Length: 365
Ligand SMILES: Cc1ncc(COP(=O)(O)O)c(C=O)c1O
Image (cartoon, rainbow, N blue to C red):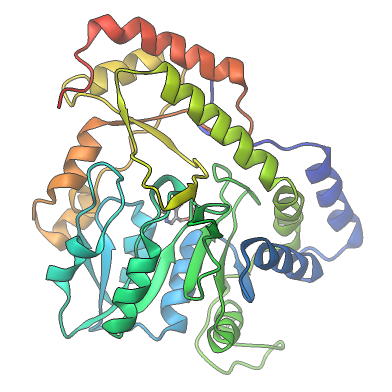
């Protein structure tokens, strides 16, 4: 089976984990603080607060910005459910907006009609890790007095006009789930240049306490363990290599699979981290092509069904049509992409895609 998103774990990760196991301190401690330092340094942010996954990073961000019941938060419908569930978890109301059908990312013009007096925050999502037009989002949120939380769960390493995502000052979250650009198996973090927010986040992730049994604000246990951070720490040291590898694989897909469209990469994106690699098929062919890939032992992901189409969420959001999100979903297949994928694996995928070529219409504009 060619796995959908295999990680690359080598002797560095094994040695790093075994050092922690031998140290007898396994929960959040100095290895986590070192991982925080390395991530902050790497992205160019003043502060980094590690938590146990990307979903927690979103929840902690919302809590740190005091988002509460009655507040409205703008989120794209074309995202992983975590973005919306985080908003629901703090009792606020997610307002779903559409995305650009070519970049898969949301844009200011698509958001504007949904801004009300109750809007408190916007959470743009960097789909597949590819940055949204973050400068425009910063200008818009500043001029409308809105909190900006960037869901870059998939996007560590991405660059916007040669500047790393996470270095712009607002709260940006990353995930270190197994499929991501770097992994700590499960893990996540918030980076920011705001000292007060970073301090609040440190309290929120640990029952509102700086030292044990001294609860100063609301919080829960969102902590990551040193055991997980040990893996993340070994991985962040190799991120340059991983990004290069992912870009090489993406280049092969883009050059070899010519009959399909891919995510359009705007000029302001100077480094795409390719956490995911999606192709757009004709909606009639999507399931057929996917079935053939799977039959040939190639694991894929059809993601994502837009939030308003998910069983649970459709009851909350009723059935408002969100056109582009639905269109992307009807066409997309995410092909294998990962640090642990070989060139030969990708060539196997390409071979199958070439063989199915004559059977299907492919993308028709
Ligand atoms: C866009 C997006 N947001 C949030 C998350 C949540 O991250 P985690 O799975 O680490 O909780 C993910 C992870 O898949 C994601 O892709």
